[in-house]
Length: 612
Image (tube, rainbow, N blue to C red):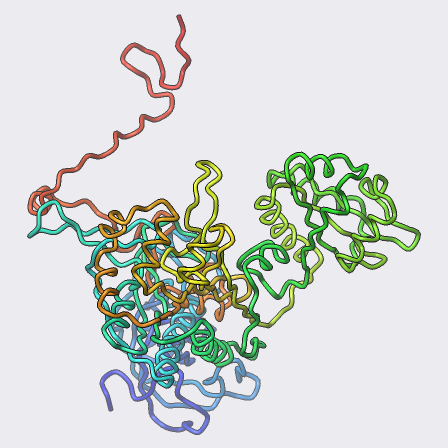
């Protein structure tokens, strides 16, 4: 018999009754029933109930074993009585009658409990992550993550993609976030950067003649954490293809996304390929977001003409005097809600920085509300037709400059969906957002700047750059969105040096600066670059959606906290003076802030106003 186990803790079944078995694992729970001691033994594979009679000489050994101690037990597999069978456990029809026991490792008193559903502060969970990872849900999330990564890899290979590894130590990149920098010991004063993405390398692979590239790529960005974004590092399914159009990239990505969500979605419905294509302009108009959640059935309508020149002066003056737009959102069935429902939404709107949230209630006897009193019937009817409102519905309005109104309308759409419980359940709804603007106007400087990815191919190529208003140009750039979460950005790349230089010139970058900053890429393109494009769906976010977790840290083994700290390994950490000297570095740290109210030498307190 093996010294540690003949079976794992999820393996024994009723067919094994009568056989001898040895198990090793962690003490999950103990229950003392007087004459009997029950121990739930857990390992990676599952849980088995073990039982020890009080008369057994090993009773004392297991009685002293604290929760999460590691033990090895040997005994006989027996069938449970009918009234003690646990149908929730795969091993629930049997138990192990323990004849021998050995404590492999005694656990100290636990800072967080592994058994049970108790919540603990995130700081505590991250500091003792190895204990947190023993908990059933988190343990299952990590197994799901591994299975998803394996599936993605196999699916890409089956489509003719080849996996390559790109460098981790590289040069600073123009991805938009801050780099993590690594000082060079042998090149004083110079720094490597950890890649924000393998963007330039995968494009260079296309220039080098490789047709279909992918990797499960680690990416590093010095940016603030959010619920759907982990600070520090993340992983993405990075891919690039040569001689392809935008639709070719979609055709490669869609079966991978549909397949992984169908395989691991626990029966939830998944959008079938081809996924809907929604233009950026339509997304901002109809959903108030370039990451629309299509589970929400509400659509935004543009209704400025219903208010232009009307007696509802607040909107009319904003439209004519400030160039404002008016967005309308239907609220099905909200007409019979009490006044407090509308007041609550109005208060919420003010908390968001808006002036309020006007509305019209459509009833059988006519339209109601302050706005309706100031609009002619024809204008009210136009609003009704634009929004599809019926008797018993309400319509809410946002009036402001276009960008502000779009963003607020998106927030109202989400709020109304939640208040009215309209969100479709148990479904993954995908879409592509396409036709992103190439440029936008910087409101502070009045200058034309890149709107999104500066390395995307402009639609219309050089002719469009030379002959059209830059603010009307679209790029071959796209995002894939699932349930309101952006899984990836991608683009057909600008592979022509002449087009790239012109595109940057429009955004105010002289050719010399472009050559200085992106000379490596430009030089490569001058030796024959194929048309190419790609995408990079986020692996962490895919698993987060599949696991139905609201926070991305729940699907990452050892995540950083919101302040980009590793509480378990105590990183970032101080470096000794010898190491700093070896790296030719001197620290210029900010001065520590004095605590509020600290007494100065003259008796005054920081923060007090000067008294003369």
